[in-house]
Image 1 (cartoon, rainbow, N blue to C red):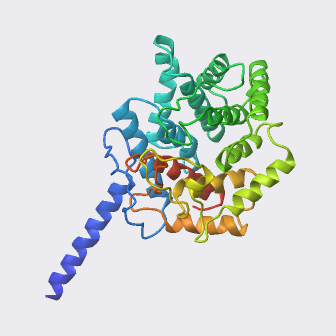
Image 2 (tube, rainbow, N blue to C red):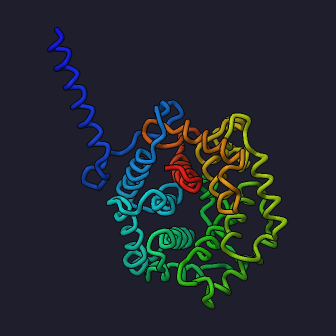
Length: 348
């Protein structure tokens, strides 16, 4: 009996080691296993793991790219912005980056972008990606940024896909304006000083002056952009926004996306205004850190603790859609921002 138990224990250890090795294997298109749908019922992870987060982000982004043959803000764009926070040296990251570059060099040249917003989103994502990796502006990133200004409207904004009703990425023009400002300001090699960028940024400043942010999420986007581009917020406006973001913390720690971005649900259900989620918490902490708020600020520290204790078994952080309960793609973006927030606070 003792020998049998010892043998069985050895088998369990070996199986556990094998499973761990499988989990540690880099995600590629060849071994890709699509993640299960985002669900509020998914159990919490037993312990926080950036490795699991990377695995989920790699899998979700490659699966979206392969299944839908498109680049989308809530998954692939967020991925390119966030993945270097953990490591850019991953097959999935190289594959997603290559796909984005091919859109610019091949599809845009042959048939053009799907819509103007695609130009802004890809330009910003590649710019932030360049800034976090090589610190050099890639020629194709410059091509995308330059093209961005050719489709900017005289009012300073871009035609944006609002029919989907997926806040914050696909719901109004204001988001696109701030995303363009962030991508331009973050671009390496002083791209923001080029004549085209200077003219475009002047229009952005005019747009934001004429269209004040209507809610806290929009204010936070302007705050983020103002850490790269001057003239978007005064020092007092930055302080006021920071104060408002800190005050929006929920009693249990963390932030609720639904409180940052008021939205009338398409499914007729009530918004959950009290429960913290991955997107709300990750986004707010990341922006606060960009704005110079210390990682040991009590609300930020509580938010970090919330993120570390609310990661799911798959490695993701769940966020309920503000629109419909069968549309939880915002969990992909929420997981990306959660990673950026945690790394910005020194978590490994």
